[in-house]
Picture 1 (cartoon, helix red, strand yellow):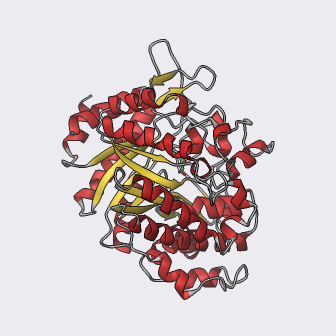
Picture 2 (cartoon, helix red, strand yellow):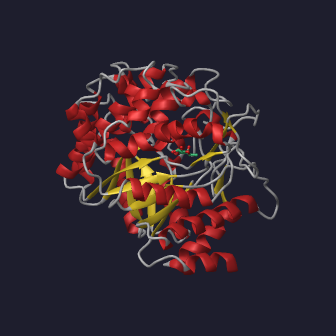
Picture 3 (spheres, protein in one colour):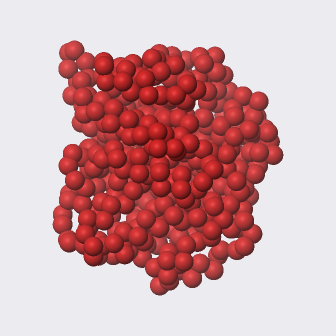
Length: 456
Ligand code: FCB
């Protein structure tokens, strides 16, 4: 384990080291909460490849102490999880579920007892179905619903949870949910996707404000940002727009620069952006105390048409206004079809730090899906170990180059419900068998344990 020790020797004191999960992907126990758009989406045949639905997932709610023990056994000092909005407020607004809040009391208190700093996310895609019926994120009221929810969680947890993110990856909610239609609520309406992006960012600003008012010390936001690589000269103008839709639209709003001009121009035949208001822009620029970056792969584009096979989430349909582009990931690739290219993580951190100066960064998700082989001697996922080694090193390279990077979370603690891919794509460092619910640490878990425990 020399490699692990070399990496941990580079990790500064007080660096946050953890593992991430999300509510819908692991909790199960769906009958004890309100319904979410992901329940509805998964229950419609054809939406999730293997037909998996919210139950049992990792049956986490019946395994909380055991699962937290596994996490602290890794030597982690932090746990990133999300709350299910319909578990806390089943109808989205109004009546609060005390037992729902109690679930997160057990998770938060259990984490703290084990020396794990909780990093909570308010919204990791499971919008209450009752709110979808009222227009969901397209509704001009959505920021009020979200702010009410943020207030409830903030009031209840501010004494114990310092780090709360409003949204996880609003890009995915907007563009996979409303443009490509491969995520809930499954709409294929590019104009709506751009409006949802904006309304999510306005709602996030309201959420930040509500959390802060409730006494939460460090409200933040989590984005999936990446580096766009243009493979040839002809594609450079298009790759600039892709960078705009993937990265700049979020960072420009946060930095109070408004919607980028080139994106307004590139999308002019789709929307006139008349839903944008100066109050909304001001709210979306509400200061955050940290930014989480979820990074998995670069987006490599070319002008030549080329069939690169299935690449989950990389397709022109997710970028409204973009056409005539090929997505050309190089080998090696993960089971998602995603190129493995660690230098792009360093680059993403450097670029983000320059576009949003003064905001501390965390890598809030990073990891890889592979088709694991279970053997009598264990799950020897050398490919995932290599992925973690190269990417944690790449994150530390950014730190060495001056980025204010405060922590790193691996995705994910468990094999879990990988959204529309169901159980077919496994990102866990711990294998979970959905039928027996047996948890088996893979070699990647042992590798991270070596890094985490020697770094502390
Ligand atoms: C991210 C999500 C997370 C997980 C990973 C693989 O986009 O935030 O829930 O699905 O991808």
